[in-house]
Image (tube, rainbow, N blue to C red; front, side, top):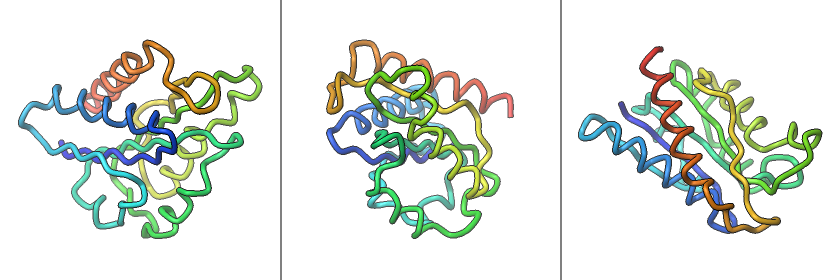
Length: 157
């Protein structure tokens, strides 16, 4: 299965999670399929052509998507993700249960679905210490488990 993992990372935490997701998918797929991990500023609509699974992640900035990812969405063709499986994640400091409803992953999930993608799993948040990180201990292992859940869901689709 061809997989594209797209991330925006300001302090490197989201990139670490994206790379862990890519590593986990590569290990599960072996030689079957290509896994590409790229920064959001490199993404073009054509990059999505061959992908069957698209995983996207950003940090949460002010309970929203970072301004820096908006140009990426403007570059993408309408319904570019039609027929593709999608999953969204973010990195964020630990918020109260009320504020945790306003993460970048939930907004990212909505954008991916508007582009035609079919959600495979619920959006996920990986926590960083304070605002800039590093990731809390165990968060990369949680990213691996989340990715394994994605792969299990993809098999059943």
